[in-house]
Length: 140
Image 1 (cartoon, rainbow, N blue to C red):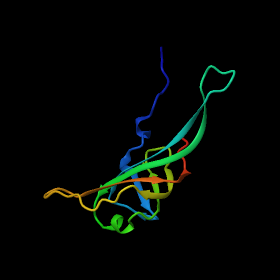
Image 2 (spheres, rainbow, N blue to C red):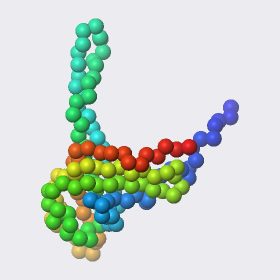
Image 3 (cartoon, rainbow, N blue to C red):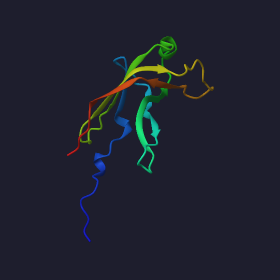
Image 4 (cartoon, rainbow, N blue to C red):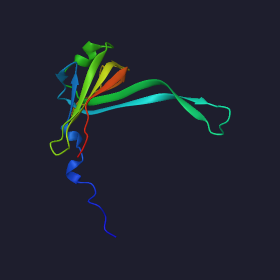
């Protein structure tokens, strides 16, 4: 049986083309960024239903950014809030995706983490209070 055309591998987005901006400044040292939103699902046991029903409660945004240490800006920023702009712009993709993470706050600030002869990396876990999908990738 013949199958359809399937996925065009050239359209798969590579993280190589990701960019992170903190308050508008491109973070060329960042090579990893993840952000997720989780919801507090409230279980409801309603009469007339033998299935548990769910209501969406509060949302919680968490993430981590990491990369090479090149400045002391994260230490200087301390625990003040900032926005992160995440942009994926693979030239072979169907478009680019830009997401703004709003009012990010570090969970911890890394003061030191080094080993002789190795590149110094920096990892910052954070929470955020909202997000906005600015440029979605819609496809063909």
